[in-house]
Length: 168
Length: 89
Image (cartoon, each protein chain N blue to C red):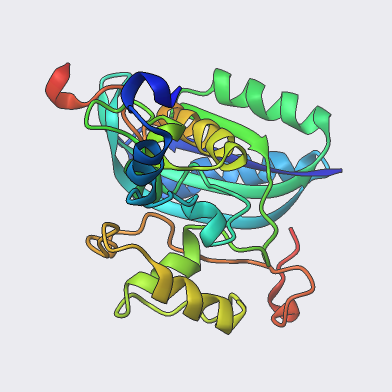
């Protein structure tokens, strides 16, 4: 078993119920192939940097899950067969929830004081203070509020919020 | 090498003393993983054409430049980052 992350873009020509159903199709597929969802991250409809299949927008979803290689072939096959999944990317999940990811809670809490606090993510406070003070001036803290990842950390292994884990 | 551009070793040294040494920003922040989804960070290391900025320019260390490159390429695949900017297309 390995931890993977899979991000896919759904065709924007659908309503919320359809998005739900399309995402559920993937999570079900992972569940049915003895995988386990660790985190589901819906970024919502986002403008794409270039058109894909003539769409300029897409509904982004990122899943972090555990699974085996059989699940992955099944997953990729499913993406290819079904129409609404206009782009996907499945990679080995590298992040450790406790390790500092440049993005995520760190930059949010660091550079955007009014952004919603992500207190569920524990970080060493002194480290945060030093990075804040050491930040070069040319990295202007502008336009940070439109963060794509609406962090909904479903579980944090051996974190302080263990009970929030949702098994699928 | 200094012989070409500078007449004396002293001149060479002086020219480089005034230049501030670049430090890898990811090392400064002790970042290990550079996420492809984090376009705000990735965009700093791309020029206005959407090309990845060279290590010599950005000052990144080899480890982080490698990670950054894969992150940018993954972001491009998912249309989070552009392959080329709109303007030049």
